[in-house]
Image (cartoon, rainbow, N blue to C red; front, side, top):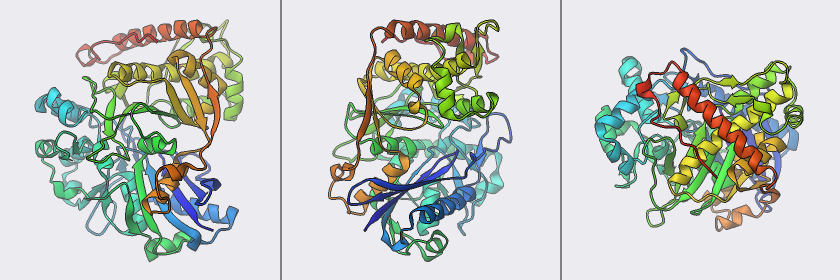
Length: 512
């Protein structure tokens, strides 16, 4: 029997999934560590993790799979990787990590990116990069150049988190065009490296790894990696993709008009377009999708909200470490709109949908005579949905058609309250599937290694588990609750200590 192994390198945990290559069904999964991995916060707005920890948890997860399912390492036919996007890993000529990784929700490079956006020209950046350099990987690298010159001088190659894990597996220093685009190292118009941005930042293109195809044999498992993993040396590593392009792939979201969503560590809606699309304020971003080719371009338009998983886990601690399913049950006890209690789910670094401004979490309208734990939990879930809908409104303004959204049957989509708020506020249909990021990476590996003759063949085991549609009786209630949330957001932004000159130019009232 042949298996496909997928790794998901998240910021909270590492997950490994084992798929039966013949049926496409997941036969085993493991998640490590048992408690969430932390982020180091040397200063407010910063976020770092040690890449070496990711590698150790890859080993732990693989061993856990073997302990629970008992497969032989030689039965793994291919390995795929998905990873937290936008991170910066720096290695020297000996392959040693030079400093902790600056990860996706770190805000230290925002002003550098804003300055580049202004000086290179906003129209030029949006035409060529589809994004402001903002808080992406290129700007983070510039921050290291300016603030840690001794570290910068030792850099041999920069890597995204998934590139680092692939390097540990194979010894090969590589990335993909999709990966370059997520760091704003890619020029969409010229279909080449973003040389103008590199020149502006004074970054040598020699620091970027070799580019390989997303679906391809990118390297083979080395003896040094195979030994601690208990796998067979020579196993092909044949797929890598950032978490959101991969989440879309895992749901078979590959063509224009198809939409994927996730609500785990971050909350994301990701839609596929053929023509380049950008938002004038770069509140929503575009990247090269996993199946894009020069002759058939496919771009992923992504809105991301940082304060999703961190809010849910914070609330869990505040309400006595209840299981998440019990939190979901309690949330359903409160009515739609939580009787006027409003949660703004920010407070985890700069939020792109708010024009890259750091924003605080806020709980508004609290009435000590009315509100209970149930109201608090419902307001938080509705607040996350409303933030997603705010970003979705920007995507719709860009011309992204949104009618049906696919998601994995996981994380916050397990909550009936969350699903109900999602479909009724957005006026859309939601489909939940029996998949996750690690399974998507495993399927991608099967495509890249040629085990599947086509992408379509890779989805034989994918099933829709639930379809949820709007309820006309509930929609007016959610519309009213969302309108109140938007007013609270506008008030909070204008009342914050952020300089008015740095505020988003407007807070759009999106109607659905």
